[in-house]
Length: 244
Image 1 (tube, rainbow, N blue to C red):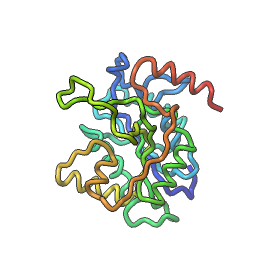
Image 2 (cartoon, rainbow, N blue to C red):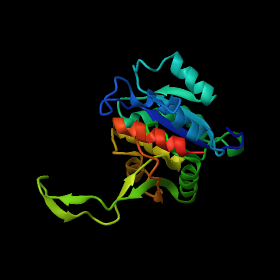
Image 3 (tube, rainbow, N blue to C red):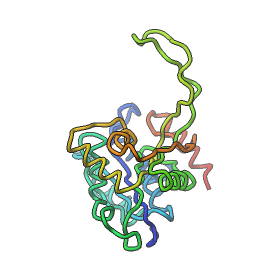
Image 4 (cartoon, one colour):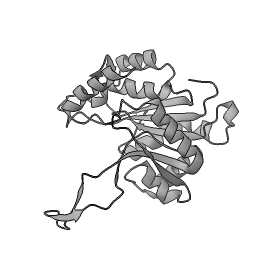
């Protein structure tokens, strides 16, 4: 982590292994010699513009143990681990509160944070060019979300039983990491917690409580898929084998 870095990353590890058929949280499964979550942390921690990295784990997860901490520390020394909440939004807020003293009022040249990346730990193939793109867009516009254009979806009827024709044009499948101006993101999440608002994702919370922050779409990466089903791990092994 560079001393001059002034972005931070929050990596979420709150999933499960149910759809994958695993008995443990999928982010703790092995992938190319490391845990899935460790690859996600490395992608953030080794980026030259990212300083603090916070790993948010699920409360009561039996695999959050000394072995996990040792694996994380060996690959990414200095990662800060906090316990999340009952929802994704509460977990993101737990990560933001860990960074709050470095977001509010701290000078950038003294370790202050201007942008926060939010990343799903089940997406281990995020790479530096994608991080570059979302950071640049967030600093320019206030927020950035990567996504892939979708032309393989159709609209359904109101009862959900029939097809109603082509889906609206311009749909994208959203990925992470997403990036937002740090102080506005923290303030939006604190306000959401105060009023009991639960958004569908990070961008929806920003849209509700910081509507003047312009969230831009940036092209995602086909290789940055989420580990969800058993075949995804094998596919990810092949992607890792082809990377430098």
